[in-house]
Length: 320
Length: 315
Image 1 (cartoon, chains in turn red, cyan):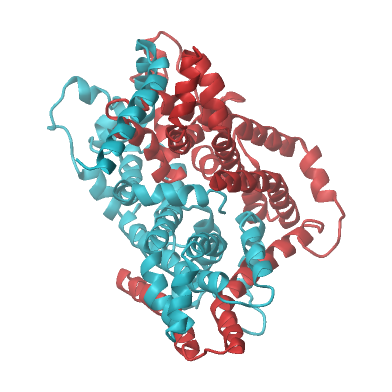
Image 2: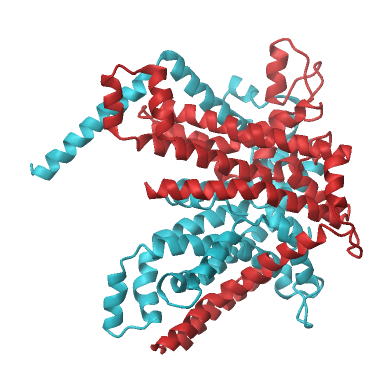
């Protein structure tokens, strides 16, 4: 297909959807009565509700159902698929890696984001300084992985390095290191990429929250002789606690679902796979549909309580 | 100077002192060094790849990008890598760039067009069970897309009731519909929720008086609501734009990896595996994919931050 044809198809698609909306608006524009309003309501919400029901609700139910079946989808196997996830040594490695991601990415990126937000608060060039950290949020995880893969590039110590990390090791007199190949620390170096991306998010939200602390609180604390780290510990942290929780839970959810970094940087080899990537491999490469479904459901179950907590905190944040 | 002016000036001055004091408590030479260290650490990797993308292939493969800084001058830099990566037969990123654009624009506009009328109905029309329906839509936000993928793919390939399959050899729209529809479906709960939040804050008297004047819901929607909604629509549009442009999973699963419909991210991830050592190509390729989201982001950051928090649980 040529580029022109693609753009033509694109315009047809947009016209189709806008056309549907326009027709709905036209057909219902004369309705005024109470029963007319019900018809109108249905016409307004049904296109969206139908897509959600067909594309989200129905598939989710099927996947949960499938997770109790074997890989061909013919026989019920009870909880066998889940049993595999929690006993198979390779799957256990995946769970351990996922745990490392979910523990480290939210905490470290929130910590760095918070420290940086405090450090540059009201500093000269604050906007510019924040932009530097925030920028990775705009780029794809594939792009971020490439950027860091280049930093980690490995060459033997005897030749000139092209990867920055190994150049630093070499100039400090150490041997060069295969960052992405050497188990178990390679997972840690993949986690660094996600921290690099997410710290900007934490910084932005927390910075806004710090600026919203009422001045009289700070003034009162100062009159009581509170200063320095104590001010930070007893005034700043408690004041921004709801935002802190929202940031940490949000990053946890993102981290649980992210598979791009593992796929781009190592392809899940060298013991670096995580749940979201393993789901992809089992479902679309190894044709283990049952196991893939079970992995997807596990992601769902892990995300669920965090989302509920996150939404409740966010509500509280908005209510203030 | 009016009273209002003097009050606001005072407020500003007071704010300045109180928070700058809070700032000072944590400011020391060490703090500045820490801030600069973080900033450097966060920018150097990108700068390194950026410089690399302009260096000749031979230089990229033998020396580090930092050697450029030791003998500055733009003499050694070249656009050749970009030319090679965009039009070279084995990379052909120009084709994928077009694909990314063709995927992204409908995937942003479609959920907006459907969500904006649904959100209006949920905010301002009465219907038995309306609130229950809205909460159900909101709750479905939390379904991770992984959970939906295989059954949805099956629906596209073998739809029931002999409907036209959306995937396969003679798929309509060259096979783009699977990706467009998937992005639309995954975005709808968030879009409806965001737009509903915004719409329900608009004062009810505005709607009431319009109704008294004889306007129907369609007139109120097109004449009053849409213009007021622009900032909220913009916030969602930018969030969704970056999400779709940077997406790998949806394109990978629903595009089937075919050259005709795969976006830049899919191609780059593939090149990272097959041409892992050709950093002159990978670096230029990475920046081809980064440049548009960076421009959008930098020029519309204000709207993006607003959409970011609300959209954080998406997908």
